[in-house]
Amino acid sequence: MHRWSGNDVTAVPEELEELRNWQSRLRAQFPIVTGNPELVYLDSAATAQKPQVVLDAAWTYLTTSNANAGRATYPWANRTTALVEHARDRIKEFLHDPAPTRSSTHFTSGTTEGLRTIPRDWLPSYLADGDEIVIPEADHQANIAPWLEAQQLLDRQGVRIRILRMPYQAGSGDYDHRDLAELVGPRTRFVAATHVHHVYGADMNIHRVRRAVGPEAVICLDAAQSVGHLPVSVTDLDVDFVVFSGHKALALPGTGAVWARQARGPAFRPGGWSGTPNTVGIASLTTALDWLDAVGLGRIERWTVALTARLTEGLRHLDAYEVLGCQTSLAADSTVQRRRGIVAFRHREITSGDLGFILFSHGFMVRSDSHCQGSAGEKTGSVRVSLHLHNTPDEIDRLLSVLRTLQ
Ligand code: PMP
Image (tube, rainbow, N blue to C red; front, side, top):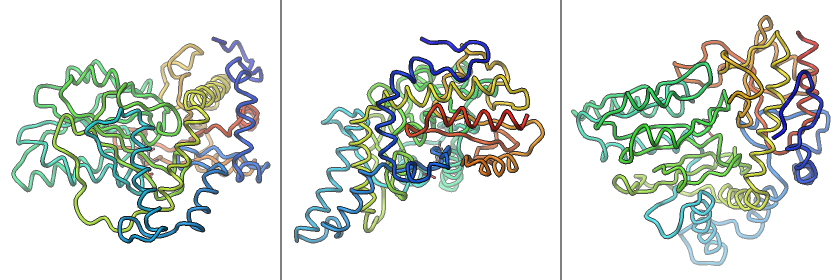
């Protein structure tokens, strides 16, 4: 593999060179990107831009079939019902869930809502007095608050569960899998994990989490930053829940899903009357997943990881900046160079809020604040750059050159 050398941040490594034609054809399919050549969108971790096919799918659905699902028998209603059912199967397929398995898919408005349904509708029937659950306190609040609330809820019912904090290395932004293995015991029955960290871009290595917690514990995966960015296989990862946001995977806002395996615990059946589903969002989600599969998630991953490495390598030579989650080493061969499309950094003197404004004055749209991170995470704000396949090496180089002038 190509290695960066010295200060050479303008060279394009083989990885990017090889994928360049593929990428430029795909970039051209994002109207908001091509329509705003003076702007650079670097906030895909917050929400992703949509390719034309997704916009077309929403338009086509609304102008040919718009109706409610599962309620009437005229053709538009039938088509909508079929579309929703097809989307469930499509999600299973997208997540490499080999049919037929005892799994189910439930639509939500996004990861936050999806993660809330599990402690509300499933966890109480699974846990018993004295059981333990592991939660990731350096991760997104959406993957912390629901579990703390579940503990209180169960407590009121006389079921006391212990919360174990996922051990975590601030030096690399990764879980400490060895400490995790020490921490867990026979009563540890549930682990809330995150696939890719929303601030550090670290892949949390779910294989190692599984090895640390053993074969029996249920693993619930917050896949908000991995679905749509890299291949996610429930078979390979051996997880029991996958929760993601459709809007971060190129579909419309207000979409998301919970996939549940039902092998290590009772069946997951979200309670209550859920009302009219987001049919147009679901239509857009199916199309987004089709498009992502056709484009190739492996290639999307290679492209964004290579771009991220280009950015961290550039930052390595700029003393005024501190890259989060790698106080120990930013060396070219360190694992922090394998960030999944997300890098957060701060300037040693300019506040992150100001840096965000300055960067926008040059056309760069980044996220700058505390990034909804849990209490074990960063205490001060930072600027987060997050990428998708429409981003280019040239955009990274232009960003680095602005950052250089601010040294
Ligand atoms: N988990 C992670 C890791 C995230 O990055 C996000 C969004 N930033 C969420 C959960 C919440 O996603 P949503 O806002 O789509 O519900």
